[in-house]
Image (spheres, rainbow, N blue to C red):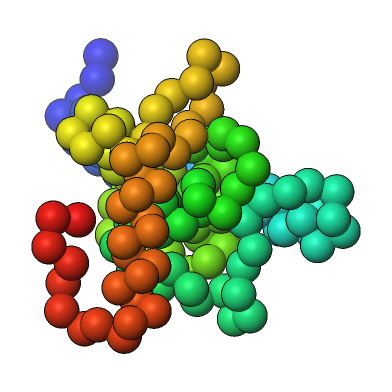
Length: 163
């Protein structure tokens, strides 16, 4: 028979173990996020070094890697797709954006890029999905990018109407 004191002791141990389990699960999730970031960084570095070796025609990152830091995600995506030969997977677009200094407050940078691409497809018709599931710029997207570049070249500081 279990005495009240022994039961109280076992209850305290069980509560302690539950608390430790919760703490360990939170640490595991944090480690998973850190590993995902490391994997994405490694993939970006590998793509960048491949590009530097000239074996892949892709996005050119400016010195310092900050070219997209002050740009909206949509505009940065247009630039990435406009400078790339062919269609790109959303993860490759995200890597190019990250390498160019783009940032997001979203929990998942890749999910944010995917959401913006979806809005650009359905809402504005600036991008489309190929049969292989990769993204490419449409004529509308090329037109918008040309206006963005023209406005930046002119040094205008006011927002572009209609973009």
